[in-house]
Figure 1 (cartoon, helix red, strand yellow):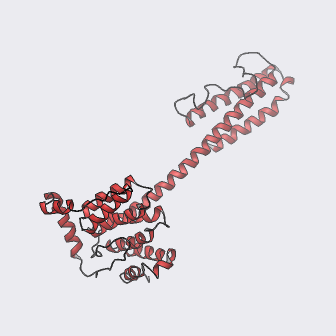
Figure 2: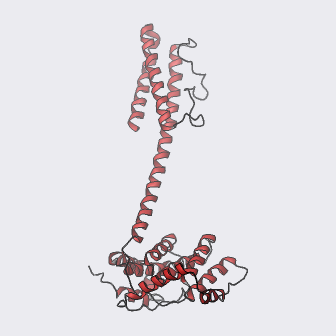
Figure 3: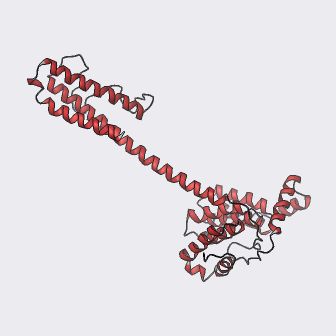
Length: 321
């Protein structure tokens, strides 16, 4: 399309140069110039309808009109005005139309570039989560601000058993004991409704009611995307899946929490838990990438609050290669 615009501009320039001698050429030459301009106008209208399908008058006029400040363009076949003036006015209109089309093309190209970048990011996130399901013993349940002690990786059947138990429970419905246990967990009622929603989800998770915690924390994150607790909620939502044996879905939430704001309070925690999820999925390469990025991005935490978890995760994978 850019080449087509260049050819049209070159043609227009040639016609302008030719216009200065049109008064001295015979009538047959003037007719030939008119035919060439008519052909250019026809091609331009066809090009307009490719760029703006449907012929919507919000985007372009059905006929080429005079540029602002110029007299109205004479339709082919009329005789008003001199030949030179008529041709210059029509060329001005063509150049104005080309300018608008060029600007529209640049806007469309920029929009496509942004769309392609978003698609690439989505594909990377999907590839990160879609890995063969691995098994590993998950850490004990703790509040999000305390480092979890990692259990040994030589007990592979516990997460699988937990997932199977959860599936069986979901199929059979909650038992009276489970319903009573969930109902016994109270939801706080303070002047900060968002914090109340998060705290209720934390209490469900802390009591090991993981499916209920997942539902509550997902509700909190959706309703309060800008709350100061949102980074805690996303991180704990990932842990609720990780502790239930679903490392694949856990990895998605950890990755989103880290990517959304790397300076947020629980972004470093999510990066470490992302590495842990990759270990659970048997993806040593991505686990090592996450651990290396954690060490580079959060050196103070790697030797401070999260040192125990960081060292334990590094001890479970061989990143030397």
